[in-house]
Length: 324
Ligand code: PEP
Ligand code: MG
Image (cartoon, rainbow, N blue to C red; front, side, top):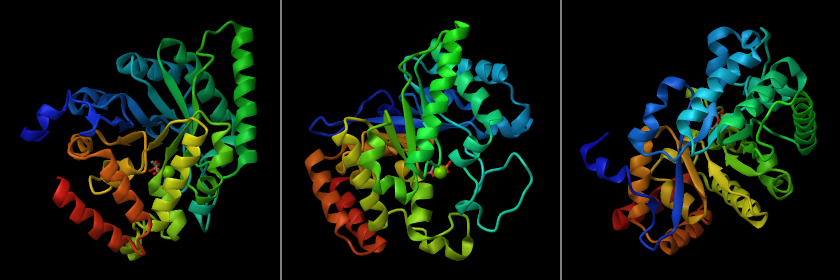
């Protein structure tokens, strides 16, 4: 933590004219929980559960073990919420079963794997629901691509809930269920998804690669991987508006959320929550606290009209010099 950031930790992420944003942390290890207080995060906006499974092998992680881990996390983070993302396998993340695909990013990943592998999905849902009896939990569904798949997921969730009820296991009946918006089809259909989700979390890491057709892990095209590309920004804006029309909060948990260059644009678009690796949060907060909401709105409108990512970058850099 930089010396001149220390004073920001207890302060709210609020613009000069009083528009309040929520800053949450992206975590994947229980050992990282101390970072929440240290960097002033208001709960966890993305807990990636992959590491938990990686350490023991995905099929060796029992429901009770998960409950034990989730419960410890929730109890330390409450009264703030913990957003647990369901196992997001495939693509750049490890898979439960050795196999090969020519295009793993366009293949068997995220929700597709969960729907095909109930032995992974069901224990995790049961563990998360049971854990929700001990503090605020939000369930986040990864790599959603189609409404009918999301419906199948919701049916399974309802079944799991009725089983728990029948067993007399307590859980939070109103546990919010949200989706990752990280594929253009979902951003474009956000109005329909918003009717059936309790919150959105925009994953710009994947949304950028799928929108621009640029592999997020390929050095040959890393120059072309531009999260501030106007095409990506338009999808982000579209998602935020659809969420708000349906009264649900919209978070962003891709790396863009921790990039101060993106902060005024995302804030100006009306994003509700930023979720990033904790060390990035104080600088994001500093930028928010130095600006007027209306000025950020005007900047965001201009950014959406830019033709290239470099234009957006130049625009925002100039803006930050005036408003930093
Ligand atoms: C994203 O895609 O932006 C995201 C937050 O998920 P991950 O980086 O884990 O794929
Ligand atoms: Mg992703």
